[in-house]
Length: 394
Image (cartoon, rainbow, N blue to C red; front, side, top):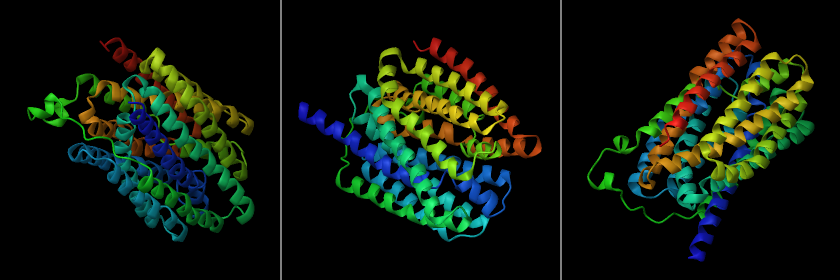
């Protein structure tokens, strides 16, 4: 049925465009928020780590809940819309706050929105894809998503040139995030289509509890992801490291945009490659690159070194983000995709807050390099465990 397949491909592209504009909105905040908190509001590095980790960790509860609800309802679209709506409202309000408590509240709301939309969105991508092309489909989605993350820092660079580089200029940029956010909502309303209602699996038919219906190999994957995430705190520390090494504030959005551009350009071809060589091999490759990047950030001593290290970091993201989601689609029955993606995203999210706070502690107590040494060591442990997981895949 070529028309049906064509509609499904359009659905993946539409979801990618939603992520493009939402990512643009989000990444108009990310490059400057740590600096705004540390210099504009005078908050500690531990608080910066707390705020950065909050967005990821708090969302974990809502990822599982929304994924499970979308499985039960057999509908995904309006759950996705609700999540995006909450984030679109929360982000611009950063432009009117002056104290840390308000930042925490708004980032909590953004985290809730992110948590609500992530799992059902990933399920929509999987259910709009051919089984043999999960890597390609998630690679395409990640590419469009990441291009938004390229555009965001470039917009910030342009606006910093107009508004200046002070705290009040940052606030004006936060307010402008409402524009791409609103475009994302309109695309969901008019272009994203619901996939056909899912037929219940045998597990569902006999009343088996959803958590016990997921296979053991899926839970082993979650365990390994948690180990890795304990060292992969938050990208905010990469931006602070760039500033620490002497990179000018005006150049930070540019290096961040180049990182995302590299990530975007490689996501689709590496997604196609993962369909051929296997998602596990691609994830292992990505983690090796991550170890090299974090070693580089630990030992870096000059500002020029930031540029190649961010490009290396982009390879890691391109190799692992889509492949991890595609692997989940392969080992989980479609009727449980929402719950599985909720759990998968949570495996990464729930550890980010303690990991970010601990990285901030290592930074403040010892030195910046200590936070990155801890990161690559945890990645090495996860790599070994994932090799064991790959050997047990049968």
